[in-house]
Amino acid sequence: MNLQDTLYNWLSIKKVAEKRTTDKAAKDTCAFFEQILRDDHQADIVKVDKNNQHYCVTYSVKGKHGQQTFPVELIDALFLSIESEPKYNS
Image (cartoon, rainbow, N blue to C red; front, side, top):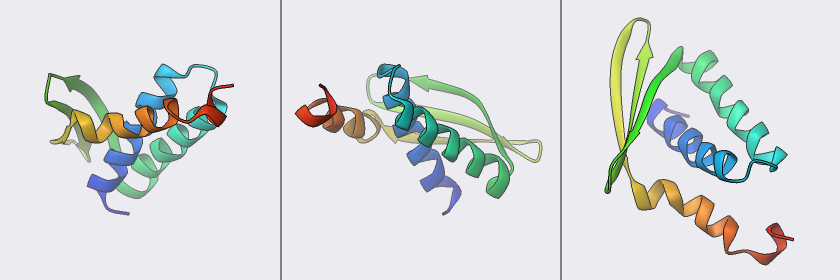
């Protein structure tokens, strides 16, 4: 999995884990993607910013900083999908 895809997956599930604080599966999945970021890409997350249109992830790989932006609706889609599914909200 390339770095951009890993960042996207991590940020999407991070949103779910933060909003659904009792969702162990979301927390475990977030930790899984954090491990991929560290082990496969040697990436550390520096910060995540959000405006009305985008999330901006600032990361560091071997001392060099990079940024990746994602549309808000793309990152929020997983959380909204889970929240709209009755079997996940009992």
